[in-house]
Length: 77
Image (cartoon, rainbow, N blue to C red):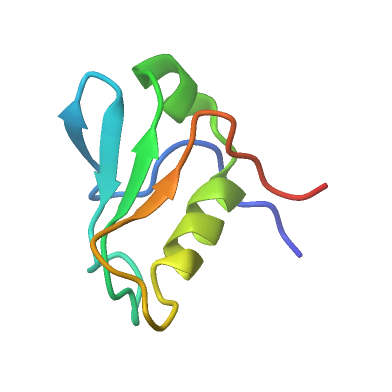
């Protein structure tokens, strides 16, 4: 599997100093927005797989409000 580029996907909006939101329009099937808690410096260096994972969580049945990713979010092993 090819590793996605680092950094947040297009359309990600800054909600507060340390809160970022990926809208439901990013991926088909997202039921809720995905929220990432991270500084600007951290979110810019997060592996693209982190955003793929959290937006996958946002598609799960039964999820309400938001899918959250903490600052230690990582992809893989």
